[in-house]
Length: 219
Image: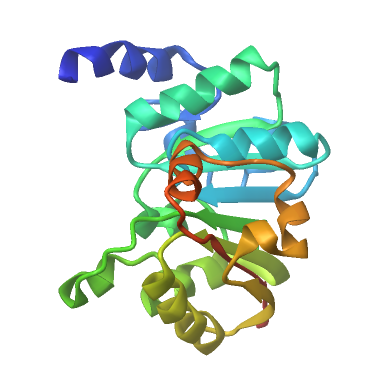
């Protein structure tokens, strides 16, 4: 398995759309994504725990007038998104390899316009709550880097995590505007532009319902 990952790590090292440890932008990009990387003043959109970057690349293709950054700690996954972006000729895409816990090291307060959190690990056991990406600590990080009235979208196949997040997201200062526990039978499905992750297709085929909410950051 490790040997199969090595070519992907090498791909990341050579790809200009990947920001990771060892590259100059890794330590200088904070607060300067528009100036140093995208070279424009367009809105910045994050996909957190982006995996293979299906949403990062799919949304970037749909909205060429926005800048998209997929963030994940797994380099082999990021490589797949990076390659897709390069193959599609997307110049409004970047990938950042880091943990979600370190977002403040790469983004200034209010630098981000929109955040997507798609099918994160549900961390179902009580002792794993500190790892859930919708716990109060992580939501506090998102609030800091997200501008006032910035959008926060959340999607999961795991209903217990969704139920948990319906409490934590408003408690953190986000206003939930729209929600559904069955996205594929909801009018809200159009907000996803036909984009699915690999695992989402598997979940739906197995009969799982997809939960979704859209919210605004209220500071």
